[in-house]
Image 1 (cartoon, helix red, strand yellow):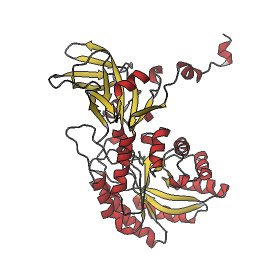
Image 2 (cartoon, rainbow, N blue to C red):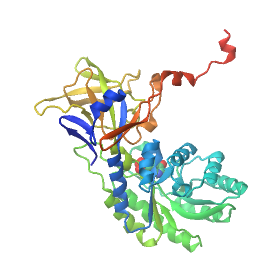
Image 3 (cartoon, rainbow, N blue to C red):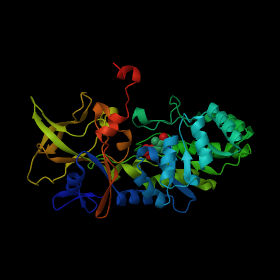
Image 4 (cartoon, rainbow, N blue to C red):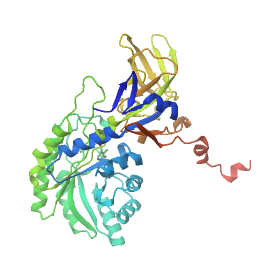
Amino acid sequence: MDHFLYKNGVLHAEDVSVAEIAASVGTPFYVYSTATLTRHFRLFQEALAGMDHMICFAVKSNGNLAVLKVLGDLGAGMDVVSGGEYRRAKAARVPGERIVFSGVGKTREEMALVLEGGIRQFNVESEPELRALSEVASRLGKVAPIAIRVNPDVDAKTHEKIATGKSENKFGIPIAKARAVYAEAASLPGIDVVGIDVHIGSQLTDLEPFRAAYLKVADLYADLRADGHDIRRLDLGGGLGIPYTRSNEAPPLPMEYGQVIRETVGHLGCEIEIEPGRLISGNAGILVSSVIYLKEGEGRDFLILDAAMNDLVRPSMYGAHHDIIPVQEAEAASTAQPYDVVGPVCETGDTFAKARALPTLTDGDLVAFRSAGAYGAVMASEYNTRPMIPEVLVRGDHFAVIRARPTYEEILGRDSIPAWLSAE
Ligand SMILES: *Cc1c(COP(=O)(O)O)cnc(C)c1O
């Protein structure tokens, strides 16, 4: 459920007309709903109720400071994968004790930044990283709390580009090797072993891979305890999928996911961390765009939008489906017809949907892409020198621009022509 519904025939974000935002901000733009973000965060709180837990929002799914502030104010922790994301979490006033640092290639500079600023735990992904962290922490006179990310060799049954829990993926340490790596960790200065971490992929629509991975974590927990490690925290990652179509998809609910956690690791008495991104932010955002031209082709009509693959890359990168709906509600009697929905970028890959059945649309009409709150704005680029599009946050009957569209002066001003060229 989200808060993007038609009222009086016009799509609204909570109580604000999307057409009004478009008139004020100009298209294309992203809109996020505070009520939907809140609702999704609370679903995880309810799913883990009664267990000592921390829900760390995956900042990489949507890193806007205002979004992080909404979630941080609800008590969310943050899962960050770079020094930049750590800075975002801190700028949204999330304390270091609620931030976990994941990622396969943390640099020494990032480690130092995070150790100085405060951190709940590093999720360490390799032995060289572990040794580097020990060095950096020792040099700074700090102790780094760590979990080791184990790779459970479980097939997440999701898109190959976002599956991370198979042994051929670059992530984590093979679970069979984990005891040896934990032994090394315990012997290193500046390292405090606190937990086990696992994350098997994104947009999982089946609970069984989670169950398989968490059972392996429970076994490892017993082994590590027997080896004398004071494991007190389990970070179970993110990855729960969302429905991208209204009609025929029903991925598992957070409550059912919580039940799997209870059944597999609930009895261990550990603090449970999870790192959901998409399930919190995905359906809390839409992308609004205008039709520039309706181009009638041979055998097919193209809707050429002012949004493009650089604004929302998921369709061209993963072949992802996003529901597209008109902002002005179609009349009940109107018949759907197929359109190829494309952007203006000079690549055939700049196609959002092929032969998509939509109500009759024409130049100047507004459309909205649903489920665009996660891996949308954060993956945008300025390809074709298209300015990064604004982000808007709605709460009740208010809206605010939470990232402004840059001016062309700002965009061009980042480049410079070297002196040896300017003279010519
Ligand atoms: C991407 C990622 C997540 C979030 O995944 P979602 O599918 O958005 O829930 C969580 N943890 C790690 C380590 C990640 O890389």
